[in-house]
Image (cartoon, rainbow, N blue to C red; front, side):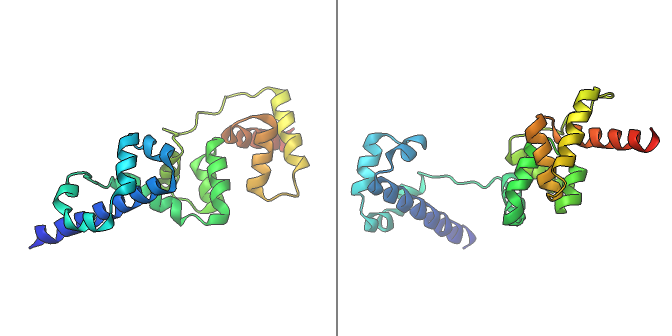
Length: 187
């Protein structure tokens, strides 16, 4: 009984995918279909395929797709979906720019697993590189000046402004600001 209901479920998924493909074929979106591996002949046949055929021949179409869900990728997609839509672009930009997990937790409440999920989604394996032990004075000065010039902006935008102007990774910017602040306090 369980196999029968799963078979019906798979059939429903296959029908939905085929309907989507035939709708794309009818709309003339051949490029997208060809990217999925279909030929012009497939597209032509999909355009003329009637919906009642899907329902009359489920066994024939059941072998077309073998859809399996990748649980890791699903988890990553769900994490990204949970990030507030107003913050999502900033989160992506900061992580692309080398923001460390600690900063992302402080700014957006991302846990380490969420941070790693976004990094995987963006194609950023591993963690950002280590900060150089000693940064040159001109780099520190440029980062500090840019930080000061953007004091009116919220912290995420301020950090991104420094990154955009200096080209430094975020983890290096944070280390630079920390070193500059320490030198100012102790200097």
